[in-house]
Length: 271
Image (cartoon, rainbow, N blue to C red; front, side, top):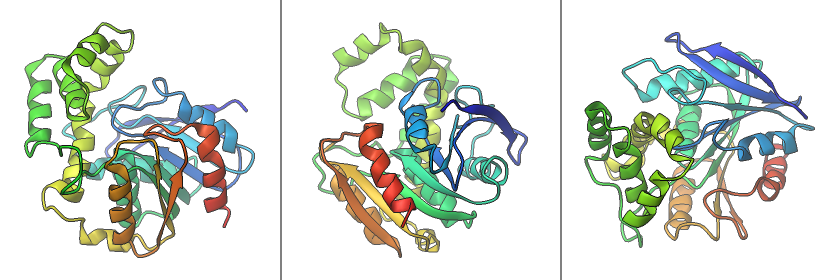
């Protein structure tokens, strides 16, 4: 099924571009730190797989793809972007599915009181104490912002890749690949996800009390072939929420295959 494309104006006037698949109860897909519609086709594939039962909305988070980028950035503005999508193409209510740091964006939107029915969180990427993986440095967001301000378009995406475990030679190889101009284009927005992560956990070393306001059913999912710290992160987030359940996807990594994930989405939203 082909998608229809459109835009909505967020509260601050920023244009948010989206694609709409299918008919039925609305589901908004919230992308992670480097995803947007033209860069990650898996979101469109997932929309097509679910289009017979749901209205699926994929969108470019602010600063990426075809969406605008009113500065300065604040996490509250991205929640307003989701609110505008719910009020517009979703018809007033929606469920949310967030990937990686986009899962944290989705959870914050639900906890903020938006008209959200259900939430699916795929691998919120918190590195907890004792995990076999280093957490981001305490000045992660500040360093990303400084790199963007310096005018070097390579700095922020390269730094991000280093913090997720890519060795220097792999980063240098990425710089020579066809994907690198895209990484440069989204480099200034990587700090946006960092703000969500630090406001949710890294600044205080604990999850925020406001998450208790997310009383709707929440499903927290991880893949068993993903980063080794993901299961503990998923368990911890689920344990923090008043109405959460857990699911492990066999054979899936940090980017789950749409055909493996779609049945889980259908089952949870169709309960």
